[in-house]
Length: 116
Image 1 (cartoon, rainbow, N blue to C red):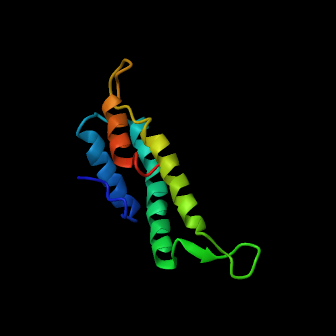
Image 2: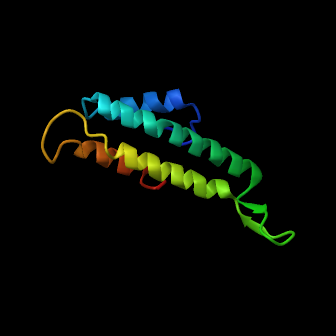
């Protein structure tokens, strides 16, 4: 099960992330807490993407009448995804040693790397 970047339901995102990570790791409570922090950020980013798609990438704004500016939802969605990726990169799973969690970081990079 992959995480759909257009999914706006936090519960569905959380379930998909847990399923993704549990294919490689035994998640600990700390890992679940990190996923719980990242989930609403990803949901909000998807909501902002929908707003930008509806309103357009360029909107009227700025300090001059009729001036077009980049939609602020674009930057906010990028910020949300970057923050979520930072939390998800900390998911390490059960175990000890420096290689603990390397699969999680690889999975995050593969899934969200092009979004951050």
